[in-house]
Image (cartoon, rainbow, N blue to C red; front, side, top):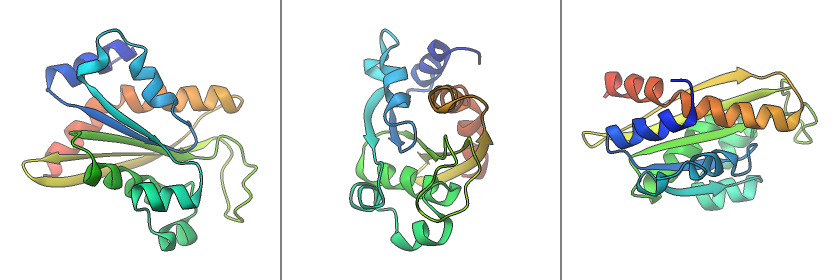
Length: 166
């Protein structure tokens, strides 16, 4: 898959509706999908949660998980995705958190440019989640854009990985 339109067509082909949970990309993932004409049949919602409190209140991310692994971790991305899966009727969830810059005031060790992704879905009544961490070059905005693009272009990979584990 090479462009965002193909990601939207992938969702259409498999009759999947997408919701997003975003921290570091601050809504860019959902906005990228929304920019594709005809996306209204595949995009349900987007959650932007930039603080611990918002992650906990809106998505059910456990404070223990945040305190143990940091807000910029796969563990938190996974809980973000599962939180949206529980509260939405979407079929597939993409979540992104991370550190587009190493200036993290939480006291947690972060890697400059490391972005954490999670994808969750319900397949045959089974909730599944997969995750990965990728480091992107560039400035903050370039990293955010690259992360949103990466998540969408990886949809077929995530979906297939989750199908194999369900």
